[in-house]
Image 1 (cartoon, helix red, strand yellow):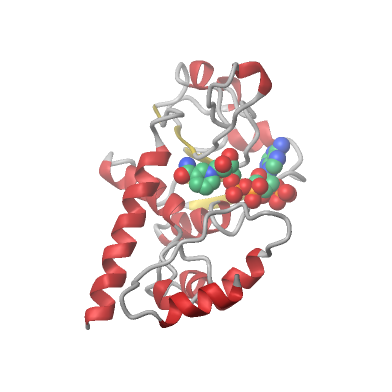
Image 2: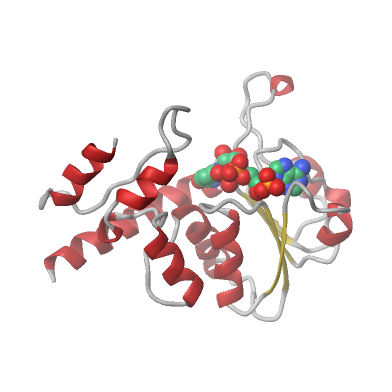
Length: 208
Ligand code: NDP
């Protein structure tokens, strides 16, 4: 895989590369992160892009959290000064989402599998962004009335009869939330649009 990435890095006709995760067990994501050229890293997973995001410098931002921020912006949801809770701390969704919310001046709490009393923390949140891969981890009873809920989760639990569901129980949460993304049809398509935006930026950067 390293050799393939080195070849793609050197290919002038190729402007952006995305490696679909999760990888099979014999392949390490670390190899991808350390080999892919930062200028072609249109999912923002390399240390150079992740570090630049953390420092508030221009970078390729991971597409899924970038899409979450774009939805907040387009729907006029205020972020500055609001309490935001991000559930999940992966490098590709949770952590960058927290950094992007912080960049927009939210007061951000990051929760994960060791968090004690997640419902109590969620009840304080004006904005909830969840990326855990745990079907229906969050329901309406855990939310502050009027909260904005961004559900990144993609889950196919046994009980859903093959249907895709999010981290949030939509039917229950929609009765409490002020705004909520459905699953499917919410964050997924927006992620794809952000990927195209990053790809175009990579094309333009190569032309400069
Ligand atoms: P990871 O498995 O890398 O991370 C999951 C995170 O959730 C971890 O930080 C984990 O905590 C946390 N977590 C797990 N269980 C709980 C729990 N019970 N309470 C609180 N936190 C918990 O997943 P990804 O970030 O890669 O993906 C998360 C979800 O988002 C998946 O469903 C994935 O399919 C989806 N996804 C959606 C995309 C989209 O376009 N909408 C794109 C990418 C992913 P800990 O760190 O302690 O283990």
